[in-house]
Structures are given as structure tokens and as C-alpha cells.
Image 1 (cartoon, one colour):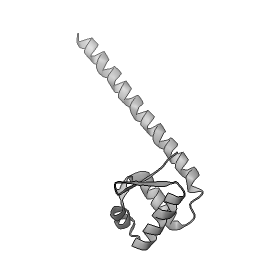
Image 2 (tube, one colour):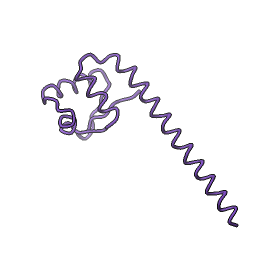
Image 3 (tube, one colour):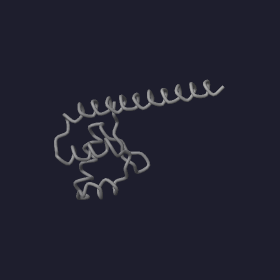
Image 4 (cartoon, helix red, strand yellow):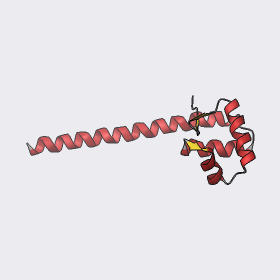
Length: 100
């Protein structure tokens, strides 16, 4: 009985490890896609906002502004530009990347 329980625990731990590895692979794929999209980013502000949202999305306008210490007008212009390039979406006041 104890041996079966130990075997079940080991199998569960193996499954959890595979899950972590799969998550890391997905994140790597997202990063690669993001780097490809990064080629079309022109301004330093676009690159900064893009990389910030890549790791900390979704975020509201004010959080992006405060975390990056970026001017309100610059951020608004940058978010508009990223939206026009179909890199960024907004829903319920939160901004997030479209990693397609």
C-alpha cells in the first residue's frame, strides 16, 4: 500500500515537472514571437512599453506610466501606435499584447 502511494507521488511530481517545462516552452515561444514583432517597433518608447507588457501584462494606463516613469502624452501616443500596428489591445482599461 505504501509503495503504491509513493509511486503515485513520484508520478505526480513527474507530471508537475513536465507541466513546468511545457510552460517554459510556451513562454519561450511567446518571447520569440515577441522578438519578431519587435522588429517593427520604431521608437524607444514603443520598445520599452512592448517589453514591459511582454512580462507584466495586462496593465492599466496608470500602472504602465508609473512603472516606466514615462510622460502621459508619450505613453498615449505610444499605445495608440502599438494598437494601430495590431501589437496591442485594450479591454476594460487594461492593455495587453497580441502575441500572434
